[in-house]
Image (cartoon, rainbow, N blue to C red; front, side, top):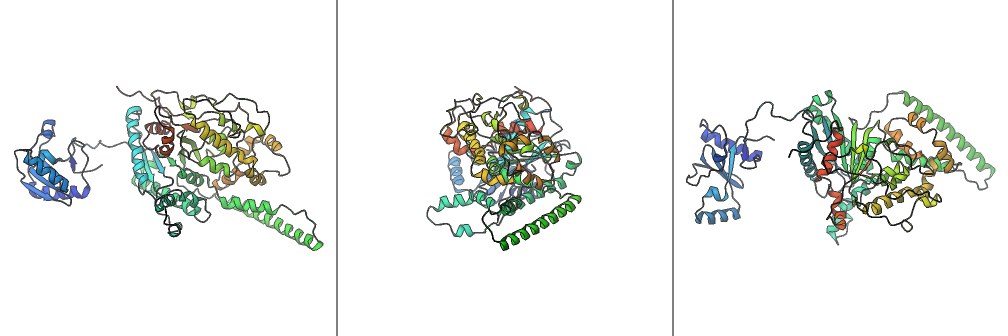
Length: 579
């Protein structure tokens, strides 16, 4: 922070406009006069009861009195301040001691060329979710709270990292979007207007993103803002890229889904075209006349020829240089907070398999590490790990540390919510809400059983219901049962991983055709954990925290410590705080 005039006690700088006016007035009347070299404590607290102001300056809402060259006081001109000042002066108190705020020209400590933070080695973009239209600028305030908590945790636990600096930058993408203009506003009834406006400014963003008309505008808006901020940062910090600076993203709520789609290049239009083609290939078995059979055969031949031409075109395009990714940087870490991403992926057809790697939902070639952070009572958040390995719905998320010198996260062993039992049948392996046993209360809060487990298991069961009918068209062989698909997919899993293209758009569709594992092998463990859970407070009301937990991540020091732990890559154990 830069400034010329500072407030006594807090040493916060005055607003730039007021500071410039005071500085100009000060130089006009006191230029050449000697000020004290150092500011000592006894001089700071000394009042000017016996001195009258030798000069005064009127500002818009305040005025400044000079009692000497280095004794300057700021007074508010609000009506209440004037009344209080009059009363206290009649009681015998001076104007300065009653309502004045002392100002200092220059900071309490003398600046030096070395008085600057180290060069930024890691930048973290903070992406907001829904509700930004309702409260513009909120992401800036939230990022400020997160940054403040990070600085405290840095001083307390990472004081040895003197040559590293992490900077958090807010990304506000909602205000620049046009979307439908004011169409929704014009069709909103007047009754209960406050509640309707609240929903239009918050939940409506989800409907916009699911709309094929506005989805591209939202993804392009966030992509352009991320690239703009990155280019602007690099232009002002040219050494960042030269020294191998890294970039991570912290996203909240719907921002997690949008960011994920940008990183992976998921394209619902291509998905719908593939579905439409699969539907057209289903022949009608009813009786047809000779003319109809001839026309149908010609149509099939034409489609076959068209498919051959498309394959030739794809082969030619593959020989060209690959299309550059949407973002100008590679994402090192992707932190999701209060994220509904798991529900979106489940509804897109992603099912648990036999892979123990993050690549099942997000390739490490695109993003090195994925984290899903949530509060146990956050109604918007869902788990991601059961979409990779099915039996992880019965394994508790990793609890986020709040103590010093904890066990490293990667060394924490999985703990089961319930004892593992062999399911008697495939249909009974996924319990329903009416047949599930009541789980015992755990130290992390039983809400995770009702919210996390039930919701994720419910999402996973979509494959056996309507979702299974929809996405069954994308299996490799529609004539083969799902069990044979799962068995054949097992031995070739590694080959599929090697042969799968690393391009973002191709990944977006390759996830749609992965078969679901028929049985859950509970001996498999994830290479690295993804779901991380905040601890519930001992006196925390679960019903009240359900309302507040979704927006409470920004001021959590546990979150700040968690982010720094993985951003600094755990190069050294977390040092104990100085007592």
